[in-house]
Length: 344
Image (cartoon, rainbow, N blue to C red):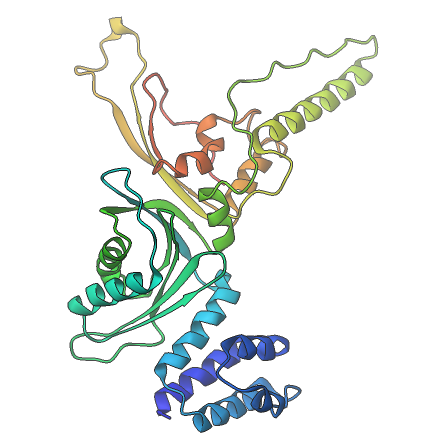
């Protein structure tokens, strides 16, 4: 077994929590049950990794087997990477039956025709998710197994989740191979990023409940009392109840998908008195709105209860998951300048 392969397997095993190494190796399926039973999982992770490498050497493991182990690790622990969402488009409404074998062949042929030194690994899962691992090289160097890109593609959908490597210059090649292999004609980033892959899937596949705001609820009137202190307490209680009710109407009762980054383009017109003649030409104001937070949607949800924003929040803030499916392109013909945005 090559020293590079042995070292890569050792490092991959070291990344796995000790109590879960057995389960990951069993999913890998490269070592027999007899070999797995011979490993002492009560010793240090370093010693465990050395035993695993010795067994892999007995089985003559190569870089393909090591890559599959890495795919399994990233599938179990996807939150170790940062994921971005891409959406592909077709020119017409035609639908093609998906053929995994044909997809792999076309993807490999397209990528390897542009770059020979590249290692490509595939693994299909039960939820129709195809995991693709790409280790990039150069015309003069072998693929770097520690700077990999990952693609998660759900067949029969236009959505692709990509975690790029440090070598971002190869992203155009990757996107081109995807649209050729899946019979699409265009691919664009949706400007959604997060460590939580499942939350991104929940957003684009509409797998969670959110009530999108269509109107502003009327504010309840407080019953005046003779006692000023009692009235203040009652008003404060009513206001908190109103904010909670509005938040439920907008965000729903359940937890929000974990989103860390979002952005969209805003195009609006200045509102001014015609007599002032502030603008010589009626041109729209364009800007790029960016949101960033460790848990963006939950941060937006907590703004009003924390007293940092009025309730209800602007639809421009609460519609982020909905607008994600439209590339975050918003045109506000009668809007105002986005000077009141609150970014967590």
